Length: 278
Image (cartoon, rainbow, N blue to C red; front, side, top):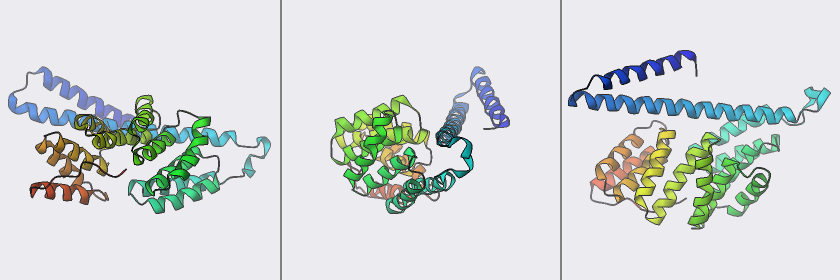
């Protein structure tokens, strides 16, 4: 984030503070509220991006530690190539293409076996493909070495949700959501906590977790889909439709069509499913 961006955020903050101090009319309040929400979301996005960048620096530190002293030129593993495949795997995961994600992330692990994030993300892909034992096998050594590894804990949480072990899943996911760290892990920890709550019929709890998820990741199409579902079952149909409309409007999201389908289904008198598949 540049200094110019920070200054623009501060200027917008000061403008809104002055607008509030000027006793706005009822007509002005809606616009001020919308601007506050927009400022909050812009800031959250920047925080997420900076957090991801920070984690990238941690990976640089880990790579530096593998350098064999004087022979720094002959690093054994192709770290740069591995990073490229991690990025491809992450893109495929976000698109819901588990098979493509697993291929890319297996390649990342082969190029850099020490990359724990690549292993954890591979576990995500395997869990979504139904290969739960393989996912757990990847995560166990990661968590033994680093119990706070967020990506690995989220992968374990997804496996436990698939097995309907909700209490255990919630424990893993809550640990990540509270501890912070890798922003990707935190974002999806809140999302899966919301899915877990949906499965349990705790719709108010689901709304809280899923709102947090889409605040951290405004382009999280599946988050808007499940938030709308939680709101619908929590007797907030207008807010549900608004959530689906936002999700349907996210360009290039593989979940936009699902948001649109949910909006159409409920408009025609149908009901959204209460139990999305982990």
